Length: 344
Ligand code: H2U
Image (cartoon, rainbow, N blue to C red; front, top):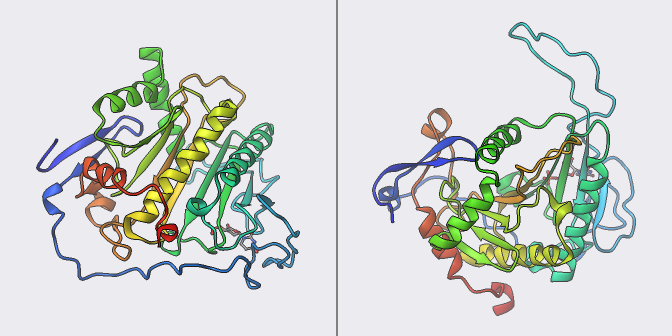
């Protein structure tokens, strides 16, 4: 295992991360996060997302059960904003960005987060993600569909009712475009996807694998930035969620539950994160270079109350981590498969 300070290369983003395992033991007298409120009620009359309640803009939610999707009342993109762009030859370059923003409530239950949901409910969520990706991606002016979730107030989540967001837009956003160029370069050179080859290498190395089933692997990437960052990647090179077989949909639901249960068990708290899928652009072109994966980017560092800050050197130089990805993977792997609330 790599010891002492070193840098690791991220071939997806073509950037480096500094790893400094020797810093792990330093004292912390800084900010402490408050732990997430546990055991929320099944229905909260004050919640904007619960069935039957009135949203911030006055719309009344239907009395839904299961997944419920609606157009974000405070969208980041605006339909019909296509048109003129400017400043292409100067410093003040800009362009309008049309798109659609949606909110996806995972179920009617206000307090049941992903790791506490039944497998059948997560399976229904996977189907809803597929429906949304298909519907939005098919629109002429939509070239990228970002499905993600902010979980926990520390990640800026505005409401504890389990939900995610979908941002569908005309442009392929900068980070995805950068990844796309690197995936394409690898595919052109090797005739297979970068992630297919990477997963093979990780399954042989074993030390960064957290969970594995017949169709998916959850691992801590060799180049992970966040302390307990993971990637859920399909074993088969499918460009997006629409390419999943029925068996793969079930296996995806299962590995998501397995991973998020372990996350909650790590510090016996509702584990905060930003998580999102990276999938091929929906620009109507074939994308054999793309390989579906979902990233979990959790901020917690050493307890339920101490988070990692990306500041100073990280803002100015490059990302840095103390805990090695190998140690993080071993810690996650060794956790019980049953949620701590069910074990008591
Ligand atoms: P976050 O928790 O990740 O902020 O997502 C919640 C989204 O829900 C947020 O984008 C939207 C916010 O704009 N929302 C509505 O569309 N209507 C509401 O009544 C409350 C929140």
